[in-house]
Image 1 (cartoon, rainbow over the protein chains, first blue to last red):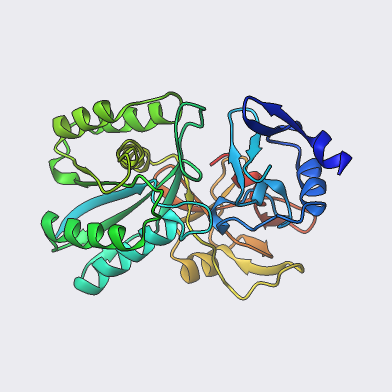
Image 2: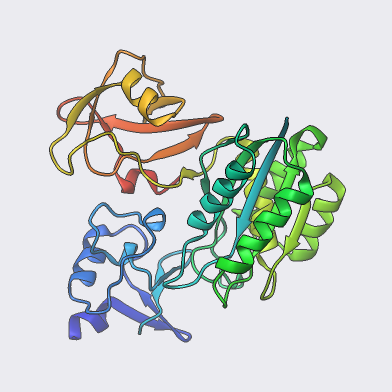
Length: 71
Length: 246
C-alpha cells in the first residue's frame, strides 16, 4: 500500500503517476499490485504486457503522465 | 460512385463500447446497404491531451473511407442512428462526413487535424471550417464537443501520415514463437498496402517477416502499413511500444 501511494502524487484533485508516460517497468509493477486493473479497449493499449497501468481503462492521459480515476 | 471520408469522436466512456468499434460497425452498415461499395480500414488518430479538453475516455478520433452509391443523407441517417444507439450516456459524440470530390481546400482540413494534435480548439472553429469546406459536421448528444475531433479525424486521415489501424491481423501466428511469412503473403492475407521498417524502408514482396503475437498496422505515407523492426531472427512485427507514437 505504501508503494502504491508513493507511485502517485496528488496534483489538484488528480492522482498522477509519478513515473510519467514512458516508464513501462514502473507501469507494469504498479498494475501488478493493483486490484482494480481493468483492461482497456485493445486499440488504446500501448504496452505489450497486458497488466500495465498504460493499458488500464481507468487511466486518463495527461501531457506528461496519466492520472488514475480509481484513486 | 462517390468517395467519402467519415469520422467520429467522443462516443465512449469507461467500460462502454470503444469509438473504433462503433466506427467499424457504421462501416459494416454502409457495406450492408451498398454491397458494391468499398469500406476501408478504420484508423485511430490521437488528439491533443490537455487538462482543458474534457475528453471522456482517450481523446482519439476514428476515421474510415467509403466509396459507393449511398447519398450523404443515407450515410448520415445510418451513422446517426447507430451513434444514438451505441454511444455512452456520458459521451459528447460528433460526426463528420465529406465528399472528397467537393473538397477544394484539402490543406485547410489537414491543417485543422494537425492543430488538433497540438493545441486546444473550439467547437466554433470546427463548425466555421466545416461550413467553409462543405463538410457535414454534427453533434449527437452531451456537449457535442466531439465535433472537433471528428473534423480533425478527417484532416489527419486525409494527410496520410497519422494513426494506427484499428484492430489486429490474424495470420495464424503464435503468441510467442515467431513464424516466417513473406511480405507478399502478409499483404495478400491482410489487405495492407506494404511493410515498412522502423528505418523508413519499404520491404520487397519476397522479404521474410517473423510474426508473433498481436500484428497491428499504421497509416503512413498514404498507405496502410505493417511496421517492422530488426530482431534477432530478422524483421519482426513492431511492439505496441513502437506503435504508440502513431
